[in-house]
Length: 232
Image (cartoon, rainbow, N blue to C red; front, top):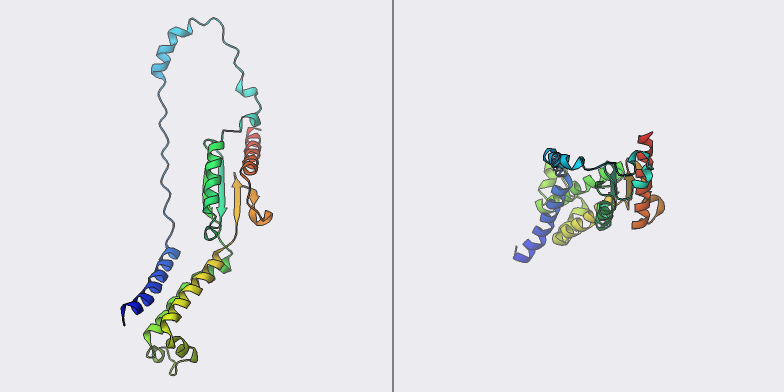
């Protein structure tokens, strides 16, 4: 077996093993968020006490209690959580990152979470079976005819001789078509945006991506409703 044949056999097997490892490898845990220490105001209060005697009357500052809570939402997203579930196999990560940066700039303090929108359960099962089938077919092609008696099959089937006739092309075809079907099964075309647990935009329903101004208005409206309900 020359170098070209080794390359044709080794490259699909290496890429196939990489796909299997990436498929069953769990996502890395998120780093714990440490709260930022609050500055001590004792030294500032001691310095400001002599100046307080100079004030004769308090200045007429507006009372924040009597203000409308909805009027202060733009630019304040503390306590709000936005989850963007998108299709990772559809190359939607760039759009999700753009929306995440926009929301974090528009609502400082908002927690934007990016996650993969999983396909239906039957599709997930079939997509996990495909790598096993790929490994099995490649193993049968490379093992030869002696593997069939061990499996209880005395005479190899006709399809084995067809694959064996051009084993290098068969291995490459199994790897390419298997990855194609696996990607098609994992593709959902979803771009779902949730704000505080409520769906504010769904690409599966609208059949389009949201605009930045549109999504900002939807999130702003949902944050205002959540704060109004919590303030009652």
